Image (tube, one colour):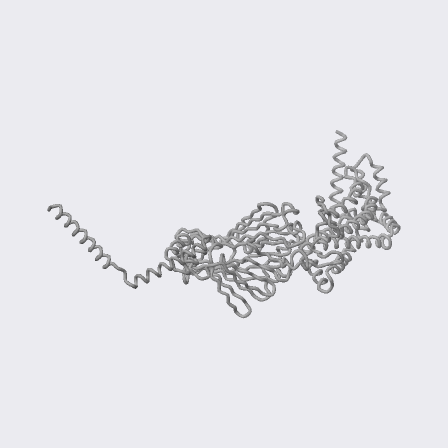
Length: 634
């Protein structure tokens, strides 16, 4: 009976427990509203999961999921990596996208990601050669970037090039204004503002922050990093690379450069602009508030011109942006355009000084003589003809100096017999021979230095031309005769092999210039050798001139083969005109008999008072002679 009672009690207990469980479940049954909310939440979760699966490769994907679903978990994840700037990842523009601004001369493409220019195209210039159909693109295919390294107050280190900016394009009159904002809140942001005016290569570029004084760590400046890997745009990569350089203005107007070669670096202070200059084009960042310090780097990428044919230089600039009252506010500008002296000069910002016209007197000749004169001529006649006329004008202007040089040589030639006689008479006494020679010069009214001075006067003009023609932007892709580009070599034969120092082609203008300089030196070397006998202890000038007759044309032939045809044309015409002037002077102007008669008359006159230099030289020789006599007595 007890066992049956126990079984019955057990059964009753199980029934009661079951009933209680049913009642509890009934009491906790979710309402219809709760069920609907749960269903919606489940659907949102599914959508978020799908978005996340499709975009797992970047923070952009995660931000898109948040923007679409409002998933608080995903937002929390972004806040862990982005801090307050996670807000920017929730905006509809937090995805790959681009905004284009352009005018008549330049086209710029700015990316949402990073907010910087990813394409800069010059609409009026073609690369390599005229008719190629390929426009010059200073920036394309990720060869450049602009980045600010942000340090947030909650200890995040962020790079703006990896974050999304919100673009807003407006117009004020004919000006296009593009605002790119990296947001940390509705009214808290870092802004890049681009301002493009009609027909301008210069682009306004402002960087400012608003409401970020509590978001960012303002204890030290922001580092602005600008990198550019310069594309080749000309026919000769080695020639273009030779004139590609990182220039900068610092310390209130000084212009300097980093230098050629590998891993070059400078750290100037008070920098007001940085120019990544290529041969005929340049990218410049200017600021109204000079950067207190900087780190500028240049690395040569053309180690072998046969292999390295795409890029020329890797250029980098790290520039600090200082906070003012906890915010950033810099008024800057970009220049993307030609390295044209006249174009750069009109901005009145010292930009034209990045054109290498030479230092000192060479630069002055180029700036005040060559550039205005050639600019005037080329505005009326074709560029090849302009070079010829330009050369004729320069040589005619130099002809009086050339005449004095030849006249001095002619006088020395007339005196040669007497100088030879003195040499034989005092062959064992070099000092006495030198004294008597100086007396003869003085008595005859001949200055032995007169032949050197005209040559020295002409030298700066010759050196200036070596700087002017390679820098003359107006010669780029201008043809003349067989040369299709006066700024590059005038190839007439393409060689199937490469000759060291010479190249893999044959240019014709350097050959003509070499022939002209050979005949010029051949015509003048005889007179120079006969002008004065060799002095004891001095090098044999006759022998040196004999070698130079062949060495100079050979150097011209080799080194000018890959230089611009304009410079070779100038040298060819210059030497040709000099030969003509020399022929006229020698045969129709300078009369050796008259010169001889004049020298004989001068000998009868009282010798001219010696100049200070001649007096000093005479005193030194007399003292040396006296000392020599004293030594003999001892």
